[in-house]
Length: 112
Length: 111
Image (cartoon, rainbow over all chains, first blue to last red; front, top):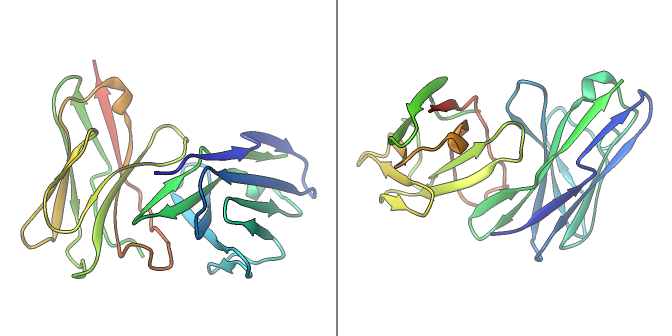
């Protein structure tokens, strides 16, 4: 298994601003992922964060809106840029280790 | 993209076994069945996974039918803390990493 932490755990932001969410893992992992969970909805994959290369984004998500960094095998950041109220969601990072994916506790974002 | 079908909600008395069904009639030969649960907006928690044999761990048992078209997650002695949304997911491990979360089953355990 893997122990994953995220910062911040929650935040309230003004529209038009940006927020960077950090994800830290207790072991080196190749594959890290970022998900979004909008209110009352299920999880949706935003992108796969690859160490040493550009992130791979899912349909409907773009780098300008959700830039991702992956500087090493234990850390990644997701930035939510130029936020609007529609970006209010829980953002989750996850890692693949062995044949199982484990999730962090999530970051609850509210945009006013 | 969801390839599984689960009941929207179920309930169970505390101390009794909770049996959560999942249909995955189009599962491929190399796809595993994974179960996760999410307790009130926390990060999803991995429970168990299997390919074709029944599996058991400290949290639950997974029963997969012989034709692999359906499975059942069993929580042998449900507690109030097991109240959560349970997700059944089929995937090939590590393939692009993505997990497709459907709507899941809201399990409510009552005293």
